[in-house]
Amino acid sequence: MERPPWDQQIAARLVRPLIKTPVTPNMVTLVTLVIALAGAGLFVPGDPKLANWGAGLFVLARFLDHFDGELARQSGKTSKLGYYLDYISGAISYAALFACLGFGFQGSALGMWAIVLGLAGAASALFSMFLNLGIDEAQQLKDGDAVGYPGYGGFELEDGIYLIAPITWAGFLLEFFTAAGIGAAIYTLWSLLTLLRLRKKSQ
Image 1 (tube, rainbow, N blue to C red):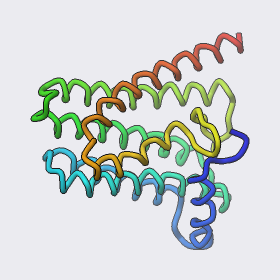
Image 2: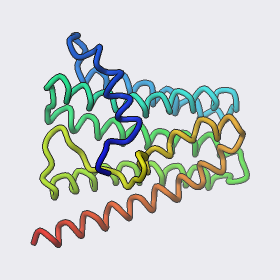
Image 3: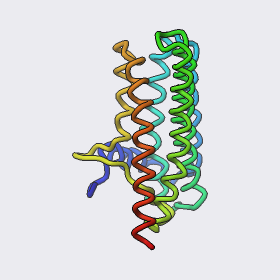
């Protein structure tokens, strides 16, 4: 997209008070990861009330994920460490979400297949991280940049994760989990094909 996604534009404004503080982009990344893991962990018991809180925390974490990059750009603190840390944090967050949802839904109609789907989604999240790093390298992006997700109208494919909160609160988390597991595999395939295309083009 030519313009940054809406959530990134909002984060760019909200992060400004932190620019002249001791807070570093890497600190923000680590806090975001802790919140995401806490949210994901609340899905494990399979309790609807805990799942509602878990969904809210995970959405908060995914929104805050834009803050570290914006803080790095606006404060001039971009770094190779921050670049990799952001990727690792995102991958671990999504992997934890899928795995925790899988364990949380093992008592559902999916049975043990919930765990299989959860672990497959987790593997897709981790594998996609390496694919995206390869895409960045193929595109020769700078430290503060990263591969973009498919998107339109100010929204990215990744923004679909925000739906997990209202969907969970409405009682359709199982359906979302199933669709997200399939979607993760499709996105991984898209990333793989994109990387292969870029490498073939550079030869």
